[in-house]
Length: 447
Image 1 (tube, rainbow, N blue to C red):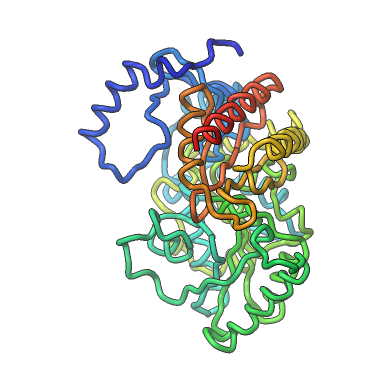
Image 2 (cartoon, rainbow, N blue to C red):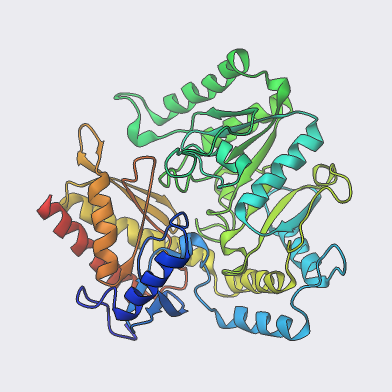
């Protein structure tokens, strides 16, 4: 490690504690944060707090730092753009970086057909606009999302999201014409049911839903995460994803891939849908698209993207030239540094280590992931698979006290999920895994 690793003696330090007191007085409790650690600077996979403690970042800003904190090429692109202009509003004075980044995404996203791309500010905004485009293009109103899905905190995206607390509780009524369909969760399959049998059962349930809940002719789109993020890093089979594509094709329904957390090399491919050999009609991206600057996109079939009339899409800050400049740098970095391959290497190392841990610690019920999007599901009993929610909360707290930032996920918050920057060094990765294992050992011993 380039700097001293944090210890339980000084985290949070005096500086962080003072800032936290100010935060509690000035900021509402709604904007939650995992740690009470206040950052001073961040580089690569390391974050240094205001007290001088350096931590290894296995959260990556919940997946926004695939190319690492403050990558030099991103900084250079941002500085050059800021020297020229900060924001003129694309709807008033358009600029080349918006067009250039759209051209890149049209070229690199899955699907051998003409595409167009628009930009907004956040993942939730991208999903909202994808739904608007799907409804305008099809003339239909209903949208299907999956159980355990997470798509955002706005009214429409809350409606599409599955987890009630904390995301939906107390905020209803929700947007109409949204319906939940089942997503495969092989770890929790009934005893004796194979993944293939589960896929077939779930796909059949969707067909039955068209008879009892909403007719297929009224459905504009099905939106799916290629790997569920907040739902617990649940990876479907290629067979299931292809089955969803076939249902969409059968009934003239558009398939929207929410690649907000899975995109930009995270899973070992530039976009996770590439693993399944399936091209969506529309795709949303955000998080790592601009290395931390607010930006998101909707890319889709050109004729669909043109369905809304001029003025029906956009926003004052949508497609900021500074963020677009960063976005162009991010795509160059992923290619130049071969980060798709690096994601595969990181994932293999983490999965191997997690399986070693699984043999030692009864808390670990399941190890899963795709590329460098990996997780462990923690249980109090491997036979009943009872969620170890309290243990996960303790592990997350114990890790940051010892110099590693990690995250939880899942409907029961009993999944440890990891999104390390893809520029993490082997030394940093191993040190982080050592901290994690020590925390798991302590929590299991004290359980």
